[in-house]
Amino acid sequence: MKIIVFLFLLASEFIYAQAVISDEYNKIPDSLHFKDDLYKSIIPDKKYENWKVMRKYDSLREELLYENKSWLDEKNIRIHSPDQGFFVECMPDWCFTYIRILDNKKFRDIDSEEELRSFIGYVDNIQEALLIAKTYGFWFDQKDPVGGSFKQDEDYFYLYLAKFENCPVSRESFFIKLNRKTRAFESQTKGVYYKTDKCFVS
Image (cartoon, rainbow, N blue to C red; front, side, top):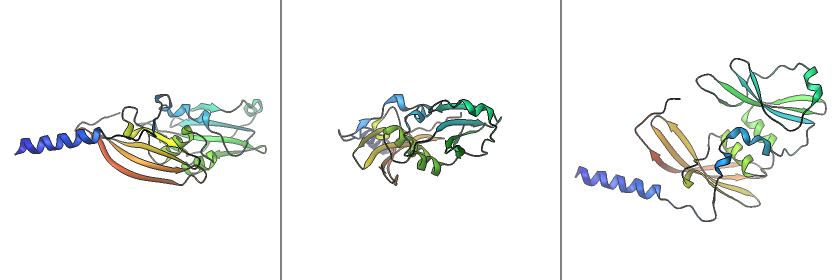
């Protein structure tokens, strides 16, 4: 009896792992997996004199991730960097990301997930769609289309993305509908499609 139950569970997992995504969907390119490379594809709705993406570490060290154009006068101005930002990561130490914009000769920082979404504005491309999804805790799986596929039309991005757990290691698929104009975000779980009894410790 135990063997029958085990085989049934094994078959169920195999069937789910073989779930087919519609041919209308494309695999998200592996080249987009490194999040820091996506910022250069942001097309803000408003034109700014200058904007740059910065990462700030617990040691107060800062790293320039992207700048839309160089601004020579900035080196002559001292500006206090923010104490918070979006995408808090780099564990066990920590870091966060923020965007500094120069608008009408005044500096302002984008330092929250909500402000990042507003800065992006209309969702022009898949890179912007992924950054918005990341603000809600989703990312894509390079190995399985149920966690890494998308299609788009004039009004929406439709994505299959994943949430990842480290202990035990698992991946849960979500169907996401993202309004390109309003950035309204809807998600629906499609279930766990990969799970082990192991734990990953970074």
